[in-house]
Amino acid sequence: MKFPFSKLIVIGRGNVARECLRIAEQFFETKGELLFLFGNSAEKSNLDLLFKNVKNSLIISANNFYIFKEECVKNNTIINYHNALLPKHRGSNAHIWAIWEGDKKTGVTWHQVDCGVDTGAIIVQKEIEIGEMMAMELLQKQHLLAIETLEECLMKLLENKVMQQKEEETKYHFASKLPNDGFLDLLWEYNKIIRFMRSMDCGFARAKVKLSDDILRILKFNFNDDRIELILEKHIVILILKKEKK
View 1: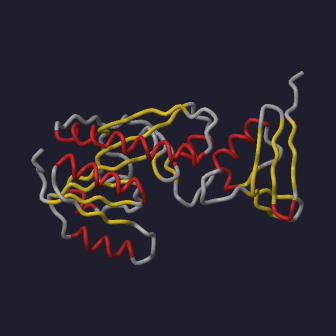
View 2 (view 1 turned 90 degrees about the vertical axis):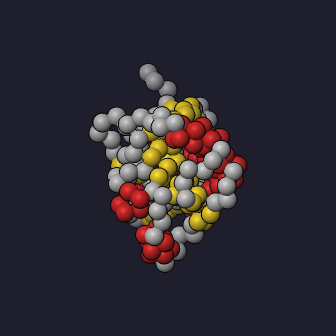
View 3 (view 1 turned 90 degrees about the horizontal axis):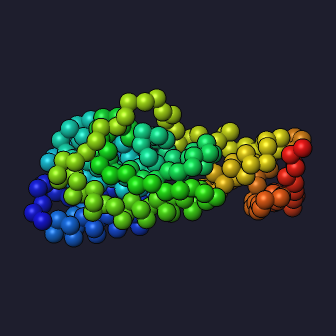
């Protein structure tokens, strides 16, 4: 297919960004550029300067935390992968919040980037049943689904088959926030404790618990229908038994 833009750029992290570049290059039969993010302090300033001079390009944002400036948005076509069913769970760590808030399903959204954050027109959405998945497992499934649906997204983009997001009030999740600030409350009911621990099994943060004057990290947890086992620092183990309803 003839490439209708001046340049193809993929920006993001990990296998998602690499695979998206490969798929887009094959789809358009053109060579693209990968901007691989590492998260250092100089990166944002460098990207601001780089994108200031980019025009009439297709930019694919895949597993990316960089927020494009208005000038770049207006001068280019930008599409973004978000790991939720927009407009729900805009912002960061959507997989964590979907589990914590007890959503039955979530998914992925490919959408156009506008001057808001995760507010642009939807190109493709696909659902995932959450079930009993942990946050890290859910995120991995979302990444795979995003890769699988990119080609469909590119086709719909070229055909201008997009849908404006519903106008409804939804929470925006900041990267610095975690459910209950990352603290487990041992007084929560049984299923809420499990839901919290599943949401915090995210690979970059550990749940914490307050015991008397100590704040301890939860290193590991196991659960079934009858009991929860929490393994804490200082070789402390907490067992929580499910109470039978009277």
